[in-house]
Image 1 (cartoon, rainbow, N blue to C red):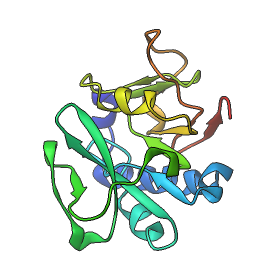
Image 2: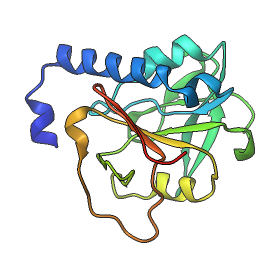
Image 3: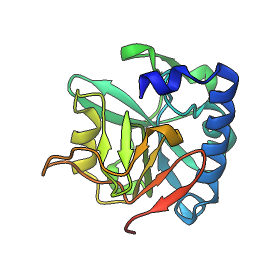
Length: 174
């Protein structure tokens, strides 16, 4: 996947990110969600900053903060209220923790996804631990070249209910 990503210029990847976020906004799950847990992207992920900025005053947008081995979701309050956290990813610095039951939709990054909803993370298990605690719709967000027919999955992996790429929306089970 890294080699495929290197084939694209920064401009093309930015366009692909914009397309993926636009398709995400078209989903009924996104439109109906009042509280969305999403991520600030690492350089090789679908860039979500513009989407977050666009929606945080209309919906409750939660971003992950890494604490030890776990993720805590905190509300995004604007560009001035974030700082680089672990791995240099922007994290909220202010706000009250929002209980998991308040989240209507979780949007997860991944190294790869498949058409069955399986997600391959970066191997540290942060999202795996978070996903097991949430019984809400979960969508994977990725570039089209990160989507495969099938990827290895373990019995303990929590599948996504859908995958959104820069080219398509795949709803698996809602």
